[in-house]
Image (cartoon, rainbow, N blue to C red):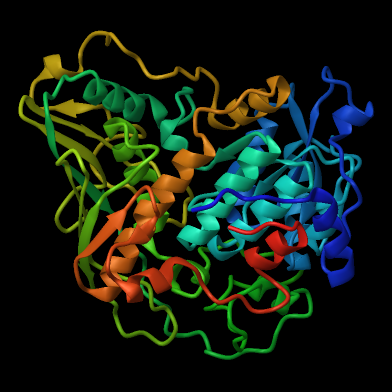
Length: 478
C-alpha cells in the first residue's frame, strides 16, 4: 500500500470549495501563544453520547491539572445540550467558554482547540480522525478505529505524517489504578518473556448484544434537534428510527441508553469489533504482532433475522499467525469473557471480572468483584518480575494521551498497532460474512486470490461525506 502524499494547503483550499470544511490554517493554541505549555490543553469533544459523558469527559475531569474541555459538537442538539449541562455540573461550573457546534467542522476550525476526542458512532471515526489530524489537532478516538482496512490505514498514515499525538480507547493496555490495564499488561509481559513456553493457542471470549426491542416503530419523524443527514454521514440514506440511531429523550433531556447503531452492519461490525477491539488487541500485543496480523482466517456466525438489527450473534472465528499460533474467538457460550493464553508450559487467563464499561452494556460477567485477578494453571507462572518488561504507563488511560500532548511524546498505542488490531477484527468480520476460509497478506494488506474478499476492503461513500473526499481535499491518495 503506497504512502500518502498530501498538501495541507490543497486540503484547506479544497474544503472551502466543497463547502464542507472551511478550515483556516490551524495552529494549536499553545503554538500561537494563547496557551503556553504551562497552561491547560484545550480539548474538544466530537460526539456527545454515553461514552463521551460517561468516560471521556470524566477522563479529562480527572486530569484537570493538564487539560480542560472547551468545545462540544454533536449533530443532535438535545444530546449536546444535556452533555453541556452534565459537564458544567461535573466541572463545578468551571467551563466558562464551552463552545457548542452542531457541525464538527466548526469545532475543528476553532483555534482555541488543541486536541479532540472522537466519541461518535464507529462509521464516523475514520473521516473525523483524518480531518482532525489535518486540522492540526491531536486525536483520541474510541475503538474500533474504523470500519474498513482502507479507512484504518488512512488514519494511521495521516496521523504519522502530520505528527499528531494519537490515542485510542483500548484501555485494557493502560496501567493506572483506575483502569483494567495492570492484569492485561502483566499477562502480555509473561507471554512475551516465555513463561508459557511456545504459545500454541489463544482463546478469546466475547459477550453478545442484547435483543432488539419489539415496541419501537421502524420509521419515525426525524426529531427537530437532529441533523439526520449528518448523522448518516457516508452511509446509505435510510428512513429515520430510534432503532437505527440512538434513543430520543424527552422534556429536553437526552436519553443515553445503548444505541441501536451498535447492532447494525451499516454502522458497526458488532461484538467482533466492539469487545474484539479490546481482547484481540491484547492477544496481538502479547504475541508481538502489533505491526502484522494473522495470515489465515475462517469463521462462522449467526446473523439472526430481526426487523432492523442485523449484527451477528453467536460466533466462532479462528485466525492463524505466521508463527503457528491459533487465535480462537468465540462467544461466551464457549469461552469466558477475556483472553486465555495456552502454551506448552501452562496457561494464563486475564479478564475484567464483573466490571462494565457502561452500566447499560453487556457485562464482563463472572463471580469476581470489580477487577478479576490473573489466573494461571500454576501460580509461579504469574509471580515475580520479568526480565523484559513492556513499557510502563503509571498514568491513567486518558492522562497518557494528555501527557503525550504536553511532551510531544507518542503514547504506548501507536497508530500502526491500532490499525493492525482493527484489521484483525475486520478480517474476522469478513470471514463470518463470506463463510469461507480466507488467506491474508499482512504486508500487502490484501486477501490472496479472492476478489470478493478484496472488494470488502473499502466501502461506497455517500456524497459529500467520506474519507476519500477528505483525502482528495488534501491532495492525498492511498
